[in-house]
Image (cartoon, rainbow over all chains, first blue to last red; front, side, top):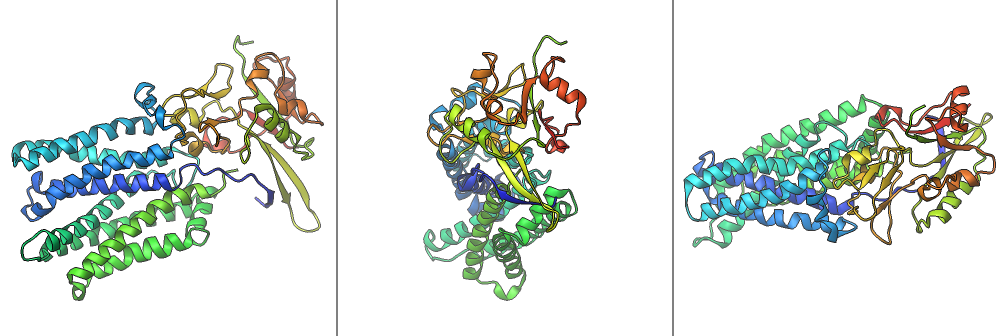
Length: 298
Length: 183
């Protein structure tokens, strides 16, 4: 279209930073829950030190997450409407139930874990993993179903969210592992083996995540008009710096290289990289939510 | 002729002069607060230097047949009435702004004073008494035509029968009912 716009009404911010924080917190919660279930459900003894802090963090972060929603909502006192007036076609309506069930599952799972009841912990873990995936996966649907924005309305959005949730969850667990080793053991020794294992896991998950981001960008760029506009906006436009430099380069490619090179196998390097990854994933949420709605619609 | 009504609007862009009076009258009629608009006129320049024209496009809620805002509202506060007008129940809306995010036309706004989402409702208080919406009434050139599309003797049906009309963003599948006549 060769029309130059002269006068336009600025769009009101719809989701904004508070929803980005909410997505980030649910992602961290789901990621740390899945890592904590590695020991009790899948039986990897190596990850035993992470099981208890993982589930406690999962519950605490998920109790914190809806606070961001309440702050964002125009009428927080009407939150009970979500449980009374249900619209089955709305992902937010599914979310109101998932956000209620998941912390309860988390707390029961944590109870059996602290009681050392391995059998019940395994059963609750098996229930918990799908609910952890659902509680974060639905946030991907929230954006994917809102078909107005090309950046959001992509079918791989739930998958992209789940993979980045795993990345941020593993990075959080690396920091937890370091804190646990340094402050809560007698010889103040960090469990380096576990730290490096988590780093190795991250390499492959980051590669998968970069692949998904590439898929998303390429299909948008080859697609319809709004998709092309969105790709230009996210790569060379207003969000180019935060997307390409901070999210992809600093937040994903550099950590991937650090974890892949054996020379960097030092505890402090790994912990520092984990912090960088967590910041990078937060910037990813910000880019998707705020960058997506930044493009004017009509 | 069907028993139910289906309200719609035709905007004759050949008659629009870009005076913004529809925008103003909407603000006055519905007491829309500062910094938000229920409808506005978009201006632009079309073409390159010697052949340049100024274009105007009044934008308002399209009152779609398949509205995304109604699909995604988690509390069913956005309702499509039987006569086709999409409204927001002010007592049920929780202000989550999901409908604002999902509307492909960006026609909704959150009222900064009372924290609920509001939108154009074709001036329901006027239409229910048989009058025209404020924007239609204020248009000096009669560029906006409002009426019942199911009544084939109404002004709007006669206009559509003789003119070729189009809509914005047809590919979203929302089936908008603010029809544009360009030329």
